[in-house]
Amino acid sequence: MSVRTRFAPSPTGFLHVGGLRTALYNYLFAKKHNGQFILRIEDTDQTRIVPGAVENLIETLKWAGIEFDEGPIKGGPYGPYIQSQRLELYHKHALELIEKGHAYYCFCTPERLEKMRQEQIKSGQAPKYDGTCRRLTPEEVKKKLDEGIPKTIRMKIPEWGEITFNDLIRGDVTINFKVLDDQIILKSDGFPTYHLAVVVDDHYMKISHVIRGEEWLPSTPKHILLYEYLNWEKPQFAHLPLLLNPDRTKLSKRQGDVAVEDYRAKGYLPEAVVNFIALLGWNPGDEREFFTIEELIKEFSLERVNKAGAIFDIKKLNWMNSHYIKNYDLDKLTQLAIPFLKEKGYDVSNFQKVKIIVEAVRTHLEYLAQIVDYVDVFFNDEIRLENGEAQEMLNLSTTKIVFEKFINKIENLDTEIDREKFKQIAKEIQSETGIKGKNLFMPIRIALTGKTHGPELPLLVEFFGKEKIKQRIGKFLKV
RNA sequence: GGCGCGUUCGUCUAGUGGUCUAGGACACCGCCCUCUCAAGGCGGAGAUCGCGGGUUCGAAUCCCGCACGCGCUACCA
Image (tube, rainbow, N blue to C red; front, side, top):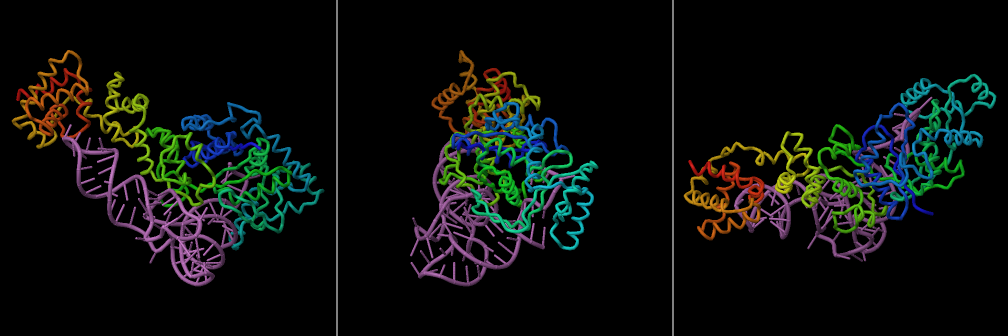
């Protein structure tokens, strides 16, 4: 049987980093086994739907490099892949469950249910459906149905016994039926709840492995029961540990960014985000840390997924992202950096110049949005000495010689200056005058920028070009 | 409250009975490199393996209990 996994988010907003990891693991597992990865939209709660969320979800997965084989828009042999378009299927099987005696109509109002729950909690009991409608006679049911009273359908949980299932990550898990509720599987608005929809869809879509968050572990017995009631073959289950806030609660807003889009907007690279997230809860068993998505596919296995939740450590993500920034294709990186510069009003019309800037400052960046903190030196034409040390360097007796030589050599250049030519010139000045090291370079840096530290000098020189250099150095030569 | 799952440096983790006086990475500190700032290289500090009992010649690794954390307990997913 071929491996088929799925990522099944509800379209309630942005893609959460935890969701991205779930999607990634599903994708990696499917691809590792030459299987298919399916995207399915679980929009059975009509009250929580956010317009545009599906498009956004797809776009974000695409950004991350996670491609699905079947899903909304793209289609596939087992569609539609949006649950709100599969309602008849859920109805059909809900009815089948009633016929087989595994489910029943419930006419209890939400108000009564809520009141019942409150009383149960108050008296120290576990909140649980009291079974009122489970005990209705067929005649009573027919009568209420004929009267058109709003109804839901509940699945029957056996009154005693327990169920044990094997989780690929946690091993055998046993849960007693006593603690399970007669869950509503079809709501009064005609939509299924998660429990019915997930089982029906996973069956029809031939999902072989259900890989999802740990929050689903306690309700897995309900799903297994449904498979058994419907006489369907069960998939394998794997429940992933949760991603946590620094205070160990479930990763959430309010404690930093949780939407993948937030990271994208700040200029985190998709390769870095995917690499980092893959390592939160999984490791290759050796000490490698950097992986392309292809390498992840090759290495991934559920056996090496951890059981305990992992704190989302932004510092380590920053380190990993900075590593990717340092090694990224410079043209691509420049393209990605341009919007941040543009937004601050910097002139980005000359791509080659911008490229020099990016090359010069990339070692400082944890994420691209930070680039604007380092580029002032390239765009500010008003040179002002930043401190006494700068002045002291300029006062050095050797400085005047360096400046004169430098300008002279620049003027004799029949082409524009670049980093290599600058290095050559510096070498010449050194051999001709004996001035070297700090006394040679620092005055030039200061004359060009006013500052005693900054980007690599050869790149600054290449960026400014002959004219600007002559202007700036000339200014200090006159004084 | 009930049920379930989990627990190795601050964080991500390696570890499946002896090679663990517990390894790697991030962050932190120092040194080297260097015109500067970064980057990079090298090194340092940092974990009584949640606690208590067992089993065993020997336990981070197996068993039991406890504690703590998290999750679930909806006509939400």
